[in-house]
Image (cartoon, rainbow, N blue to C red):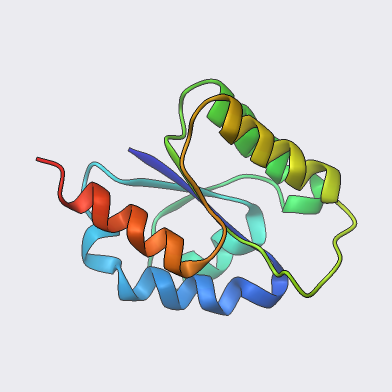
Length: 124
């Protein structure tokens, strides 16, 4: 299963904290992480193996949306910062739309991401 991880600047530390908390599940062979560039670099520094795309503002959100549309990415964790404005808002909305169109689970905060991980951890 491929899980995309993306976090706005104000949420990157929270994403790394979430990844570390769930390391036993995310380190399994059948879980592959893909991310936008900067989030991926932070995850790598925390010891995770990540397939990095471009930075979000440079097209990384669009690259991950393409992976969702192609059926390569089955789940997206996009920790959005609700208190900040973002210059690439159109790309963010496009990614959310593509997840909706292709029925791919999308968590925009740690609580929802935790529920999604609990669901896949219970699968045989």
